Length: 187
Picture 1 (tube, helix red, strand yellow):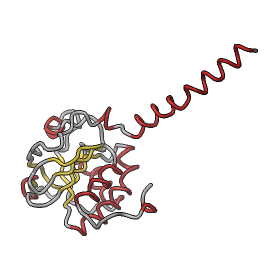
Picture 2: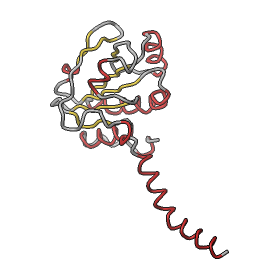
Picture 3: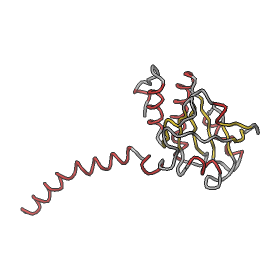
Picture 4: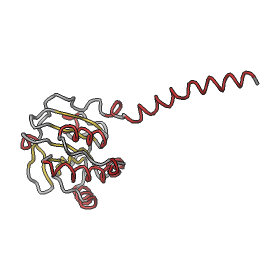
């Protein structure tokens, strides 16, 4: 009985450390999934990709403005889960002049178009229509997980790279004073 009592108290003493260790890593999955995304302060790699209409869009055409790159795909469950949140972030910050570009890893144009319509995505969309592992933008931006987000500043430098919408929103609030979103809007 005495051994059980001692084991119980040892376990109780270690419990807060275990909970903290789990919550800190769970809250920051960037440690695992965003390691190869462009680092803050580095030049955001330019790209030229096609829109659904076949027009060429490049990152350089957004120079002078804040721009969010949203890497996603219609087949990605996490992307679909985060889409309402991204739509809300777009609705809030596009009013402040922030530009958004969706970069899809869909291989079929029809699936890509259907997802854009279904989720009511109104910001420009581009794709190579290649598998994520085969797309050149994957290598250029170090994408290992989607959704991934890269916030580029007006000077063309990366401000933030993350796989978490809440980090993107927080950084946008920091760089655009006066745009704080009410906590009731957050998940």
